[in-house]
Length: 136
Image 1 (cartoon, rainbow, N blue to C red):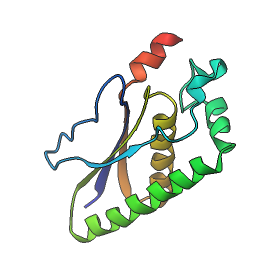
Image 2: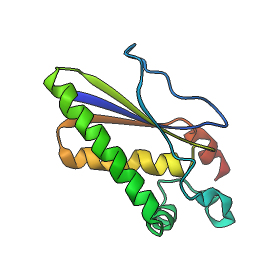
Image 3: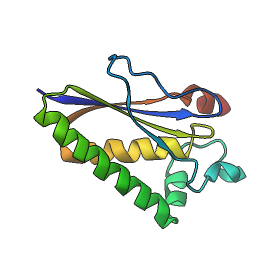
């Protein structure tokens, strides 16, 4: 049976931690507010963590890569255990102040890492996406 991983990004300021629709109580919530914030610079304000200039910005900070790797190690370890126990679902959420740059970037980094693993069904949702799309 394939295990589904639901990945979410959200804003601590504008909304709340996404609820787990499966009734299993959630999963991981990672706080990205300690990472460098491109949203403080005018050039990146209307972009999101999915845009190449924002992704390039994050590449300048080794702490961002360390955060991504630490998350991946923890999630992959949990997924291995979940598969051994025949669990069907894991939810992983990333939050930051606006839910547009840091959390979106980290959610997408995990999505790509899990895609490379090739063993999981991955669904991704950006809770604040309607807000950034309105800016453009």
